[in-house]
Amino acid sequence: MVFFKQLLYALKHESSSPRFSRLSQGFKWLSPGLSVKRWLLLSAVGVVLASLGLAIFVKLTPIFYAIEFTQAIVQNLARVFPSYISGPLVMLCGLLFIWWGQARTLGSITEVLMPEGDEELVDVLLAHRRLNRGPKIVAVGGGTGLSTLLRGLKEYSANITAIVTVADDGGSSGRLRREIGVLPPGDIRSCLAALADEEKLITELFQYRFRAGDGLTGHSFGNLFLTAMSDITGDLEQAIAASSKVLAIRGQVLPATLSDVHLWAELGDGRRVEGESSITHANGKILKIGCTPANPPAVPKALQAIEEADYIIFGPGSLYTSVIPNFLVPEIVAAIAQKQVPRIYVCNIMSQPGETNGYTVSDHVRAIDAACGRRIFDAVLVQKKMPSPATLEQYARQESYPIPVDRDNLLRLGCRVVLANIMDEDEQTALVRHNSQNLARILLRWYARTQSSHSDKSHSLPRSPKTGQTNGSKVS
Image (cartoon, rainbow, N blue to C red; front, side, top):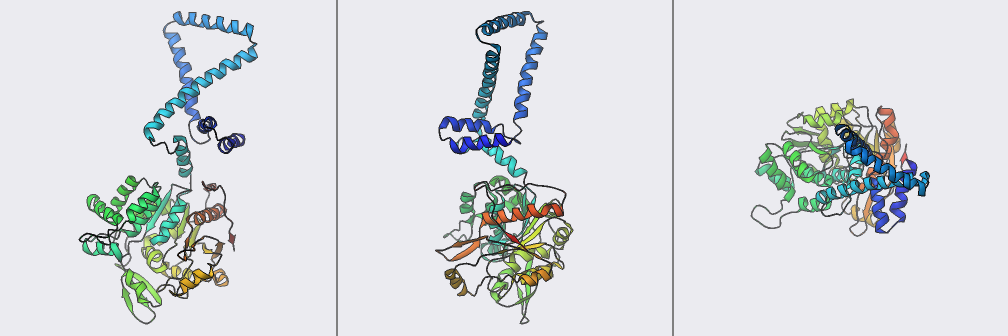
């Protein structure tokens, strides 16, 4: 198997001619795990059995002479060429005919299924097999942080479930919620676009905002699409399922609850603020957060996904308005707490004005613990390297600063710390975001290291399909 993989690698990277390229594509059909070799062998056995059955049916009358004729030819060939040459030569000719016939058959199928020809069918099948063998991952959160995470995770597994908050009441989602009475589709829209195969085009389409039109201005196409699907299918859950089929996403997206929840927060100055968008704008220290109605029921499929999960990830995203709202659904917290699988929280890189001013990493952990009433994760992933001075200056104007890693407090809380470089810094706009590929790679590496102590199930860590490498991280 190792030799076979090395042969494929050599053919792929050392041969630039079309002939060798085509040959390497042919060898790919014999790759382990593709479930093709067994059917080729079965076809060959079928040819032999069919010939044998025909011989029995006609009582060997015509076939006897055919065999005699073939035997005469073989004997004459054996006189000219030794058997150790003629035998393998005839066998090779037979194998070439089989390969040629199968290749032409698969080529005809490829032309129908993939008419554009941008990618070989065998490559699609190999990727499909690899992704379907990936771990069952549940990602809990909302906002742009969750969609960033999903964009990286989908390169390693197709068994992804995103559990998304439905507490948003601002922007286009808030308008649709107030005017039509639907659950806010904004965060769900972003997650669907992130998991779609044609992500770039789908993202541009779903994020497109109308700039004119009576009542359309400010609305995104994705929000209107999900709103229409909700009306057609009956509820948001079925609308998401139908949209997922249309977009051919890898995995599934589920709302945490189908209840019409509204967030509220109690601030340090005694104020009680209603509404997700108002909490951030209140610019006060958040002491407690909850929702109305209290204790909303969870979506059953979300609980099932958690029960079957091999790995659970929280965040990244706004602490009080994207991550914690999912934990205001008691059934979700209870389901996660019962799972003995690797569970990790991805902390934000910068503090968020109005929510986490002056917060350390341990403050984030305490806030989640308080909302859940217990600890539901084992470790926290934080950015290792500081942003550039120019970026820090830009953020400081908005009263946003890097979140300090107070390791001693985290260790006292019994929380492991994973330090890694997972930041993507845009020098032109001076903005920092999580890097999708690095974030997913580090998370899968940590999972591979810790899964044996949590579960008897085993999934080997797949390498990045783009670089074939893994990034380093430090665990304490």
